[in-house]
Length: 252
Image 1 (spheres, helix red, strand yellow):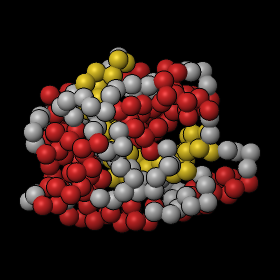
Image 2 (tube, one colour):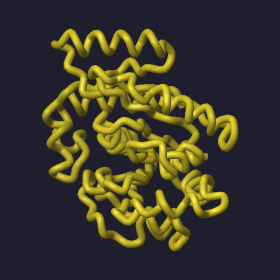
Image 3 (spheres, one colour):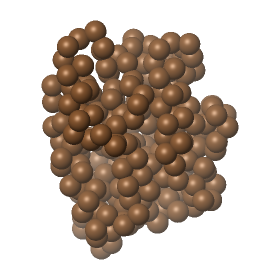
Image 4 (cartoon, helix red, strand yellow):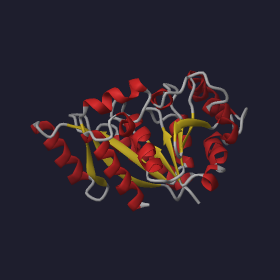
C-alpha cells in the first residue's frame, strides 16, 4: 500500500509547492511510482511541471465528484511521475464543499485507488487551513511542512499543528507529521542561522537534517516547467532535494 503525503503550511511563500514538486520528482527518479496531486487553485505545481491550467478532467472534477481519480491522472513527461492537475475552478470548492455532508472525506475517498497504484502520493495544499487543506490532511498518512528560514518562520505553525491534532482526534487518527523542512536558507546570514536554531529547539524531533538552500536554479526551474533535478541536476538545490527525498523515504 502506498503512502500519501500532504505538503502543507498555512503561510504562503515558504517553498511548499517547490518542495512538493521536487520531492515527488526525486522519489520518482529513485524508481518509485509517484503521483503529485495539485490541490491548490493557484495551479503552481501543475504549471511547474509544464502542464496547462485548463486540462480536463482535473482536481476540481475529482473533488466535486464529476470525474474519477483515474480519469484525472495525466503524465508529467517524467518517468515514474504522474500528475492530477489543478484548475482555477478549484477555488470554488472552498465555497461548495462546506455545504456538502461528509465533504471532509471526499478527497480521501477519491484518492483511495492511488494507494494500490503508487508507492508515494504527494498532495500540494493551498496556503490556508480551509476545506481543501483539511480534506488533504484527512486523506494523508503524513504531513510534510516546509518552513522558510525567515523572521516569521514560526508564524502559523502552531495553527497548523493544532489543525493536525484536531484531524487526528476526529477524522484521521493515523495522520502524523513526517517532519519540517527548512527552505530558502541562506547560511551566510545571522537571521537564517538564528531561525534554524529556534525551529530545531522548538521541534527537536521533527526537523529534517536536510536544509534547502536559497538557490537561483530552484527559483527559475518552474519557468521551464521542470523540477530543479531535471533543470540543473548538479546544482546545490537539486542535491538538497535528493537528500530530503532520502530522509522522507527513510522516515516512512
